[in-house]
Length: 230
Image: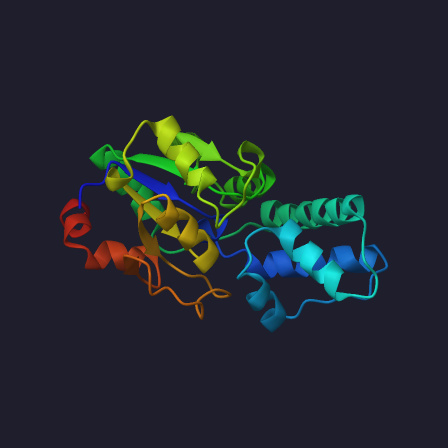
């Protein structure tokens, strides 16, 4: 396995944010006077679809009260504001192995990139909330939903990353945390490690090249990484 680029494909790979996002949605619903509520099981099922706007449109279509596109955009913007404030102010722990992975990449001369279809606000909030444990300047490329027309599972964001990094997919490892995002990397021809989060661990990752509960476990189990971390 010759890796020249490690592509972090989701903020959920960096930190557990799903329940923060879920609670932020529910607060945004209440503030908008909507009698909508996403419990944990409902939100887990919604995470099979990539993109908060898609989830809101799905919810709106299922309700008697169908919202206009601008109302959905406002709801999503308010959710993002609530979630980012909590992450930045209360702090957040990075998932096991992220710090070690970043150190390994620096030592080995491996390029790191963030290849997401989330909003840049979410990434910036995690950098602040991680309290110096994560520096966005360590990533050669940071791609977000603002950079593409198609969100995951469409491979557009990964194809763009490959073009900007001027690299071949055979020299990349994508790390993802959900089936929709996994399929995006696979469609771009990139080998993929899945480290699902609390809300996505029950999804089917049979197509992934590697499937580990955490990046730390992958680092410990991989002979390549073991030699570098010894």
